[in-house]
Image (tube, rainbow, N blue to C red; front, side):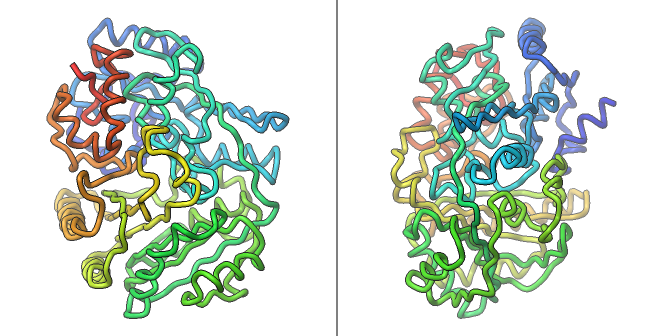
Length: 477
């Protein structure tokens, strides 16, 4: 039972056989008092605590530790209560994004929530790191639409927004809630979506035309109407349902438009005619169907019940890194990136446009600072199939070489990163307690100037640094 619970929640099998210690206990609470007791007991016995909602933490920090520890697995904290009269919902942290989307759609086909794309990601991790997604240009991040939360703090108290205070409430919405306590539930403001939305995916070879289209896209994607999300995925992968294999390097122009196809075609004709979008490229659907469309492997008419699957159908060994970009990457650099992608199978560069509503929210509004002035976010992602150190090291070395190559073309001082694409390479992460100055190396990449405020709040609410890992917010002292 212990092994099945531990491994079932590890969405990156890379960490299943990790040399890190295994948890002494895995707690699967059904009631908040059990979480309170776990926190209190762990403090008394000198144990660390890890909190797992969906298990997608890119570096496995929700279930790995180098000292004796306990995992609080929120698999039973999954209730979702939608209040359509107030257009709000209380969502427990152990629910997945797919479960959340499914339950909102059961109540209304004209309401949704702007969170992540991967349906098996836990709400607790996605929300507390920011939560970028296909509707962020219209409505902001998942974290931008949270209006209350329930947290078990270091003293075992259960606090809501009023009781925890605005500083701590600010910190947990994008600053990584596991640094401050255990979030049991979030209250969110639902957003309105049209009865029909439109999606399309256009494949272009990364030849001269493809690179020119990607270069052109960089200058306009953040200035499209807020209803249009048009991302680019550069990859050498061919998908067959939920399985993938190697293929030629190509660019996918992958889009969601919050409206009918007639309006989308008019926008594209005016703003990006070079892409050559045609009516037959467009698929109208409900918003909840678009959730499946963007996750991949979805077939029209497939039951929405697949959103309730907590296991990632694309589960495999992987390593990822991220960047934010403030000026277009030149074609010569796109050529260099393409050449590097052609040398490895199963590699992706996902490029998500920013702008829109994100430009209207100050970078100090929440810990997530990557707002106005940023054109797009990049996620570099490499997978492998074999559980071998040789294969893993080869892939990770390739990823580092690509990341180093891209350095001149992305944000500088600091070179930024997205917390939910956790990357232990970007800071001096020594075992044990990290000093404030050590933590600033990676902290300013994730949070820029907001890092100091996060550390100040940490100093007040958890001065002894009980809730800690190698990339948790440290107290200033």
